[in-house]
Length: 124
Image 1 (cartoon, rainbow, N blue to C red):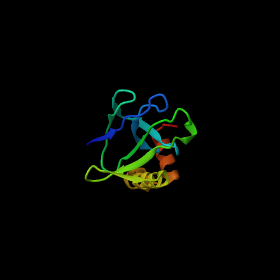
Image 2: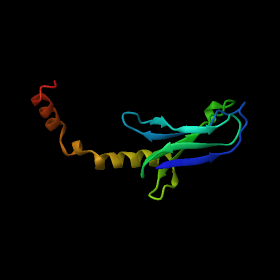
Image 3: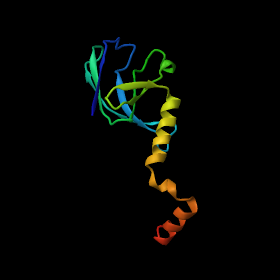
Image 4: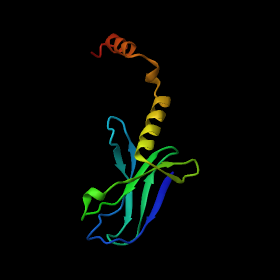
């Protein structure tokens, strides 16, 4: 489903253009961001768009060029009705890990079983 969020006009000398992204934490506890689109003109109102599924994690933000250390993205989880539910980064990280564990069939095997199968297939 397409997630669309309208943005307000902003001071383009102070702020960067708004952004939106899908987030996963595969191999990176700070998150991997797959950026969506911003349709608009610098300094004016626009629309953020990204393709997402239910339970996907979405982040959005806008860089403050005067004080880059003030920048913190907002995190959301896509609900069943296509709404974005605001959540903290910690809750998003926990949620993502829980969903990965449920959907990952490899987790039913021990490290020793996986290593044995890799050796059996001659991959190492």
